[in-house]
Structure formats: structure tokens, C-alpha cells
Length: 395
Image: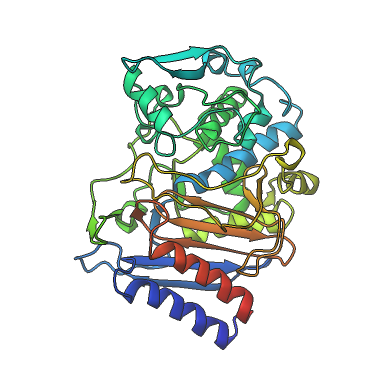
């Protein structure tokens, strides 16, 4: 049961995020315990200038919050003994062994590359230690793509992830197109598209319907428009900005559309050690393994990011000053967060300013969804932090 005090505080957070000067056009936010959602809220509009009120069943491009679901499909293969995390990824997707390490650029802008000292492993991809980056977080990746005419990852094509390694495998944590390669491994092992695998092995056991690579006919009328925030703070709706439909490749790193309510079912699965209402998705010890920081033993940590495409992302960091690691496939805070989130909790985010956290210790989690570019928006991200803080303060 949601207390009146908690509901009032959370409703006020959504209202303030939308109605403050320069606020978000609209937001949907939910919080859950192990048994069900104890808060569901919506505020604002799905598109500025139109009479389309935001609702709890509105459909969002969830971008990188796709990653944890792909990671779940990978860990199912590990459970079944079909693959091992220590295996070379090239044993399943040979094209990954063709990737070279960037060694700089010639005076004319042509990249210099060399072979990596060792092969990329499945574990490297799970932990973002392969050396793969994203063009909007790396000037070098952006420059390499331009030199070789490699398309953006948002194109949803296999060509878009056949880019360059920014460092040796295992040498650093670099956020990038790792999980898209893992999606290819899942497809190679299962013999079908990633979306079909997710439907059979994640969505159906959890009762998730309004989710997929591409939108069902019933989802399309509920889609939230992505908005662009200019440098002066002005918001412009971009109704034509959608992921490729149908997608040429099911992008395990960023390709899903979903309602917030459907994602909450996935969060509850993690809180419940892999169990869902219609069957088990993962073994309990697998979920425990997925929640472990994999970078600590490598003496690595997760820091902030610098934008190389300001239209897509601001420069920023989650929980600055807090030591952070990475698990399979979530960021984990190594110490208690200022919001009240305990140490060793899980979180991640999507490019159009959606954010979630999963606190297995307290048995609660939440998801905050808007559709604004660039990432780490000046209204949406503080709203998420205030939302999470209110959950811990008033619960």
C-alpha cells in the first residue's frame, strides 16, 4: 500500500518536473517492491503543442535500458552450458575478431590500427571492457566512423557495430556497443531473432506484452514523441524521430520500445531472484552473480562521460563522487548513494532520459521515463534523483 504521504511527495515530484520553467514535456514514473507497484504516476503531455496527455500506458523508446534484458538472455545461455563467460566472443560471432585497436590518426585523418593482444571474451562484452565505444561518447570513435563511412549505431545495422577498439580488451571500462554483439551471440545460439528469444524466454514468463523491437499496432498510438532541448533550453518535438521500423537488426544495446509498467515486471524479476508470475527466468544464484561488481577485481571503475555529439548527450556522470562498478549488465554503486540507495544496488539509463534502479537489499526499484535529447537532461535527470530520494525518504 502506498502511504498518502509518499503518493503526495511523488506526485509533486512529477508535477514539478513538468511544470517548472524549462521542465520536461511529460513523465511516467513507477516504483515497486517484490510483490507489485506501490506507485504509478504520469504528468504532462506526450508531445508539446498537442492534446495528448501522458498516461501510465504510454510507450517509450527505452534505449539502453534494453541492455539488462539482453544480458539476461546471455546468462540463460550460461546457465544451460551453451556458452561460457570466458569464451572468446569470436567463437560465436567471428566478425568480432576482425576488430582492430585504434593507434591514432595520420595527418590526413586516416586511422592507424593494429591487432589486439588478445581476443575479446564474452565477459569483456558483459562488462564493457572490450574497448568498443559509442560515437557520441568518443571523439575518436566518431572520427573513425567518418573516415570509414560507418553508420551511426542508431541506424540499427550490423555495420554500425563493426567499428574500432579504443583500447586493449580488459584495459579499461568504456561504455559502448558491447551488448549489441551479445545480442548477436544470443541469436547465433538460439537460431532466431533476439526479439523472438526475449519474447519466449523473458517477456512471456513475466507477462510482458507492450514491449518489443518495433511497436505493435496497439502500441503505436501511445508512443511518446522524442523532444530536442536546444542550448537555450527550448524544447522542440521531433515526431518523425523513431528507430528504424522494422529494425534491420534487433539491437540488444538499445532497440526496445516499452511501457514503464512492462519494465517494472522485469525489475521485479530481479528483485525476486529470477522468478516471474508465469515461470522462472533465471536461477537465483545467476541473479546473484549478475548483481556482482565485475570491475573491482580488475581494479577498474565507472566514471563519467564526455559528449562528442552534444545533440545526443550532455557531458556528465551518475552519482559524482560515489565509487561505482559494473555488473551483468548494470552500474553498481560501491557505497551508499545520496538518494538513500544502499551500496551494491543496480541502475542504468536510456539515451532519451529514462532511468531505473534496482535495490535488492531493500526489495524496491523504480523507473523514470521521459523522451528528451540530449541525455542527462537538466529537468528530467534531477527529477529522477528527486523521485528516488522521495521513495527512500517517505516509504
